[in-house]
Amino acid sequence: MSTAKKSYQRVTTNSLIQMKKDGEKIAMLTSYDFTFAGLVDAAGIDVILVGDSASNVIAGHETTLPITLDQMIYHAGSVVRGASRALVVVDLPFGTYQADSREALKSAIRIMKESGAHAVKLEGGHQEKQSIERIIQAGIPVMGHLGLTPQSIYKFGTYTVRAKEEAEARQLLEDAKMLEEVGCFGLVLEKIPASLAKQVADSISIPVIGIGAGNDVDGQVLVLHDMLGMSKEFSPRFLRRYADLHTSVMDAVADYTADVKSGDFPNEKEQY
Ligand code: KIV
Image (cartoon, rainbow, N blue to C red; front, side, top):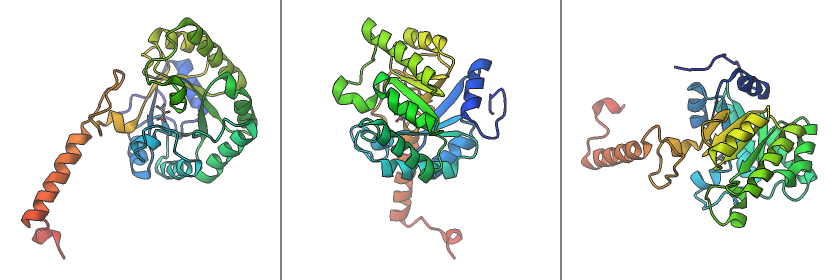
């Protein structure tokens, strides 16, 4: 059963801003393919993020850095074909926007044109101001991402909580205000203290979506494979598992293998 206050034919960036005004929390999940996007969309999610976490959960890389623009466009196109209600936001992958604002715009245009997605997300604050402005001027909605920005993992050296120190917290708050000012429609805050996330959400009018940022923000995002319990290994404190697909898949595949080996599958009704 959906708990949405209003029903939207298609969630837009404006609907998200309205949800914040109405005090309706925004539910966001990642997806990377047509089948899961269709399920996630039909179940009532507001925003689907085609995250560069595809680099980890789909391609098996250790970080998000290796995934390419072509690969992101492939995933995004598949998700767009599966989703009829949710707003589809696509991550600009590492190396496709940091060099200059011209390259950033070109990358964002490729995503929009070739995948049919509705918006892009990129990591960083003041360093990316020019690129964000240029993309927005071209008519492409942009979502920001501050806090633990995984594309900078080699600068951070660790995936632990960011902005615990005052200087970093102050900079994050300034960056969030700048992102609102230049016209971002929303902001992801990853792995920062809940009190700071609340301060950010209270200070800006655009929706703040948290992951490991507490409950006093305007919505939540999780990586789909994590919340479905596809893996037992990744267990950060902020993760709540809503299913145990690891066990379900292991059991189903083991049962199938046993049935094939014993000659039990297929039976007479399962043949022509
Ligand atoms: O790539 C991703 O999945 C993300 C979320 C963790 C916010 O950026």
